[in-house]
Every structure is written in structure tokens, then in C-alpha cells.
Image 1 (cartoon, rainbow, N blue to C red):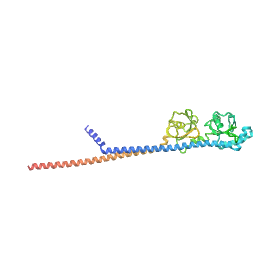
Image 2 (image 1 turned 45 degrees about the horizontal axis):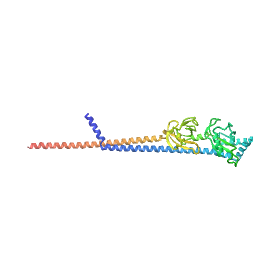
Image 3 (image 1 turned 60 degrees about the horizontal axis):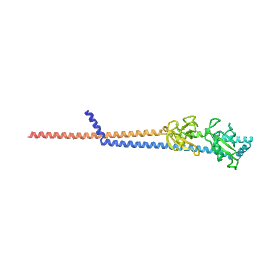
Image 4 (image 1 turned 30 degrees about the vertical axis):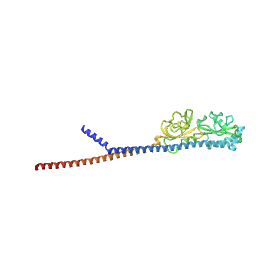
Length: 365
């Protein structure tokens, strides 16, 4: 027990000495500064990823907007082209077979060169009277609102993405009113309908990613009642286009926040429940939103390697500091022991001299 007590007292003396207290203060400074640098670097790494995702989301949103504008320009060129417009009006008014054949040849060229799945012509009674591919005479339900808007405004409008009843493909229709020249404001004689398959351009555009990645993808979503509807095919879930829905109560999902109008960059979970970094952007003049996302694990993989190096460096600094403190303590202890030894030696010499003098004095007496 006495040895134990002495050992405890020795350690207490060591740990409360100015040397170890100063070393502890330096270690706290080193660790604090290292953790602050690590956090700053982590924030910088996240900001770089968020900036990249934001740029990708905005670029894709603009590309989608440009694609929609190009489809409307195609429809405008066709309905405003002098010869084709005259042929369309003539056929809607007379139904001549010769005119129909000329129109079909012209539409086939457009469909082949601009990748349209089908082009159809609808009369004023909303009956399809001409089409390049198989069709139903009755207008699909999703056309009702679009035709009303086209008739009232006289502008070229488009439907939302929807499933084709003919072949089950996902496509978007562009509807252009057909009117005689100089009859603005009058009821259209008919409507030219361009069917653009999403798989031909839109889906590849959304699914493409500028750099190699195992998890990154872009999503096209819109609100459908109290749910978010995924419009395109997903990288990690097949058959999700126009099928996958998630409730708007899941505000930890970037797609939900996007359709609610909360655009920006944030961390959340995707439709798989995986932690992701994401950026969202609206597609202007549509009800669509783009989400660009990447798994957090992949996005910060490079940062984790740097983080491990920072931690190893901190550990080495702390270990070096402790080693230097111990070396300095040992040297100080040796110096103290040497001083004590020399003082004790001098004390013994003094005692021996005093004894000799005392003995000599007694002998004299």
C-alpha cells in the first residue's frame, strides 16, 4: 500500500505540474484547431458538390425548356408555312383525298427528321381526321383542357407527359390551332397535333450525367394532388415513370420540396431512403421541377480520405506533444535528482568534517 500511495502521489504530482498542464493546454489547442479545419474543409467539399449539382439542375431545366420551345416552334413553322397551311385549311374544308396525300408526305418528312412519334390533324369538332400512325377519332381526355386553351388563346400549347393509348409509350403532344391567314380571334378550323416521344430525346437528356458516377441522377417531377409524381425513368428503379408517387408529407425528400416550391440545395433522402445531396430547379412556364442528386457517400468519398489524413495528422501531433512533454519531464526529473544527490553529497561532507573537527577538539581537551 505505501508503494501504491507513493505511485499515486507521484502521478498526481506529474499531472498537476506546470509542464503537463501546459502540454494539456497545447493539446486542446491542437485538437480544437484541427477539428475546426476539418469541419471547414468538410463544408467546402459539400459546397463544391452542391454548386455542381445546382449547375446541373439549372442546365437541365433550361435544356428541357428549350426542348419544349423547339417543339412549339416546329408546330408554328408548320401551321404558318404558306403551302402547308393552305393544304391543311383546304383539307379541313373540303376533305379532298389529293390534298390529304400531299399533307401526309409533308408530315412524314417532318416526323422522320424531328423524331416525332406521330403527327395528326383534328377538325373543329375535335375529331382526328388525319394521322401518320394508327389513331382513334375521338380526342383523348387529356386533350380537353389543352384544346380549350388553344382555342381561347390562339397560342400553341402542349399537354403534360402521359401514356399513349396506342403503344403505351410516354409522350407529350403539342397542339397548334389552324386558322386562315388574317382570321386571328376566330374559331380554329382544326388543330395540328405533334406527338413527341419522351424516350427519343427528353428522357436521355434527363438521364445523362456530365461525369462518370455510380449513383448520380436527375429527376423530372411534378405535383399531382397531395403526391409528387416522378415523370421520367429512374436509374435505380425501373418502370417508375408516371408510376412512382410519394406523399407530400415526406419533406425530407428533395423531390417533395421541389414540387412545393422550395428550390435550392440541401441534404435529404431519395426515393430509396438513401442519404443524398441534392439541388432543385424549376422548369419555367411548366409545372415541372428538376432534381439533381448524388448519394452522400459517393459525393464525399474524396473528402473522407482527406478527413482520415487530417485525423492521422492530429493524432501524430498529439502523440508528438505527449512524447516531448514526457522527455522534458524525464530530463527535469534527472536534473532534480542530480541536484538532490549533489546537495546530499555536500551535506555528508559537511557532517564528516564536523565530526573530524569535533573529535580533534575532544582529543585536544
